[in-house]
Length: 248
Image 1 (cartoon, rainbow, N blue to C red):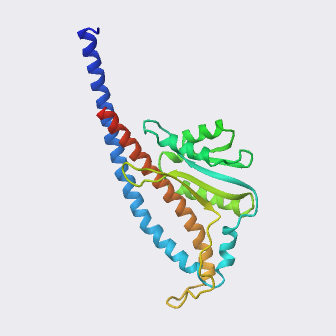
Image 2 (image 1 turned 30 degrees about the vertical axis):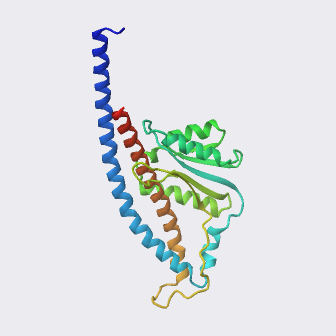
Image 3 (image 1 turned 90 degrees about the horizontal axis):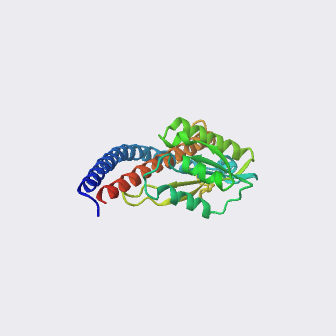
């Protein structure tokens, strides 16, 4: 049987652990609120921009602009795997890696753009060629997101990639962060081709030229929004994990 001194030592150790988990929960909660504000502000802009894009895509001649982005011309597959750099977030990373593994990507023709150390390590062990983007997991920066989007789009248009897939955790609620698998490229062609889109607006220089400038912006913003969403999901998972540890 443990002595009184040993019992007191264990009680003190538990109390110290309680302080650590409580502090980590508060930090994660604060970061989550900041991430929620960022994603809320970004979504309003993205939805407005996408609305303009969808309207322009219905114009005559828009198919010539959208077609290069809507049909892959060969090449391999790129997977953007968004995990975290740190632990203590429950099954957050394990769920992402498990989903990635279940997709059955070919190791010979697939390159993994790993945003997060856990994804980088897991993909490397599975034999995939990897690109280290772990610095992007710390903070969602639009400059870095835009640069990655531009690189992926360029490889796709050059025929070096036929498909780009993004795997990330979506912040649905504080206790629910489901893993999503989305096809980033090729984009799904919008219906309504051939309709008139200039009944209520005067578009200069032309709908096609405006769409040509707008489409890359939409793709860049879409990837950045995904990274913001994944960051919020990570903070939510860590906050919940630390809350459970504190309760235990």
